Image (cartoon, rainbow, N blue to C red):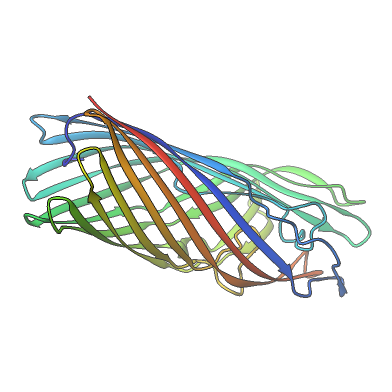
Length: 355
């Protein structure tokens, strides 16, 4: 914030176009092959909006800001009767993060900042369940508010070099809601319950180097503490376990490089690449998150509509590596095996207004 010119507001949205394809490689139920459809593409186009506002105080030495975004999310819905239905049929996860922050410009070469994260999470997890005689639907739904913090530092050791480091704390949610099984010939229930959702802490390191008055390059590395996400443990109100699905995510790193060029006073163009390792593991990967290592290819531009109004545009293509799913579900009666592959397209637009 301490490098910005006066008070500013930025509002934008990313539109995600995910695609996943799961191929049955021998899934069985009660020892018999599951001859069924492949679920189709479980994803649909999804907008993800964001809002940021900043203003300087005390002769531009102290800055205040507010950010509202959706740092984590997931929404997929497979076709009825698909072969992996005992693992998942529908998943919805929404997180909204509200972050008031402050920054202090100690010197021309040092700025520090930090703030709070107030995070709302809402989740719905559905899958098929069978007692062999009949098939029903298992559902877990709940929501929660929880809190964390973030801190950062920015250094300018040389006139044309900027170095930054940032840490965002892990946030643990206890989702309060309902756990139910419906549609079976016997054993149905609908009770109050809770489930844990542990989101990772994130450490980010970045550098910007001005090559000339018009051209600059960027490099960034980020560490994600995904080992916080060990399981989805659903309990009743007395603490008894209803289900416990292991996730066993692993910590990951991402590495990114990019560049930006000012064509003239009106146009700036940029492009970049990022490698993003998946936190999922072969023994625990599920159809809720049929993820793999990702290669990001991005390009974008900024157009100065007038001196105090800018339009940001960006496009990204993410290639997701092929991986495997091999799981036992439904008390061991179902074995889900599949090959996965996928991709994501992202279009983004933003408006930045300077007061």
